[in-house]
Structure formats: C-alpha cells, structure tokens
Image (cartoon, rainbow, N blue to C red; front, side):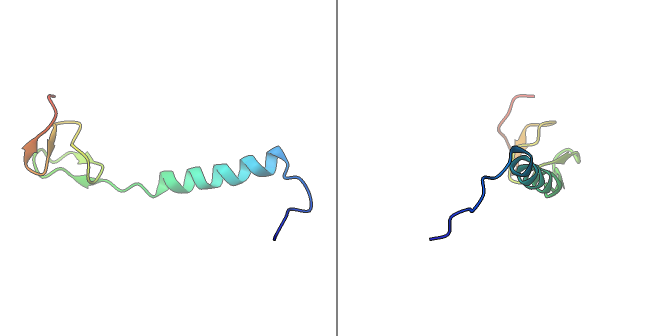
Length: 60
C-alpha cells in the first residue's frame, strides 16, 4: 500500500487545493435564459425572471 514518505506541508497542501478551486471556477458556463435573455447557470432557475423550463418557480 502506498504511504507518503514525508509529511505534506501546509503550503503544498493549500497549493493543491487552490488549483482545484480555481479550475472549478473557470469551468462554469453560462447559458442565455430563453424567457428573459439574461445569462444564468444551466439546469438552474434564472435569478432574474425566476423561470426554469418554461415554468415560473421563483418569485422575483
């Protein structure tokens, strides 16, 4: 079984975590809401008009 030979420093651990966090931030894509035309995250209700899949699900 693989075991680390040396303890991972706080700096190295944080650098690894930061890389994953920023990669995740860049991967967000935005789509235009078909109802109002504003940009919103896919598979979520539009925060501007409250519609999701042609139904109003949020009071805005």
